Amino acid sequence: MYNKYVTFEQVNAYDVSIDNDPYIDQIIKNNKIIREVCRAGIYLYESLLDLDCPPLIILKIQWLAGKLSYNKDPWEVHFSMIENYKNNSLILEQEVLTPAKFIN
Figure (tube, rainbow, N blue to C red):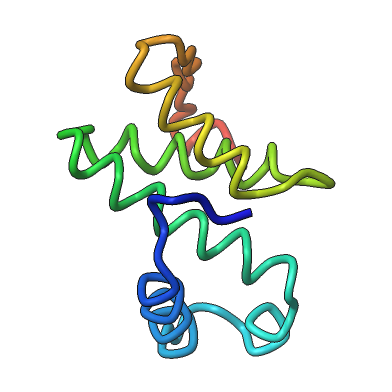
């Protein structure tokens, strides 16, 4: 579900970016649903950058939006994340880091 803010030119540019990304496996690139989540994620990234969102927070929001997109319209989920960020209504949990010596 694209909206009036997303153009087909943007979507085409996102496809080029996805197709040229060496870190995305070809199986994922060929999956229509995951590709749509990736497109929405790129749009989310660009939108949050425009809002001066810190890169670490963008990464957390993208990760959450991707997870929340399961069995949902990814564009709707990603647009809602942008609106929630603008309204300061996102709650991101503080991650607890474990020192490497405790992992083994």
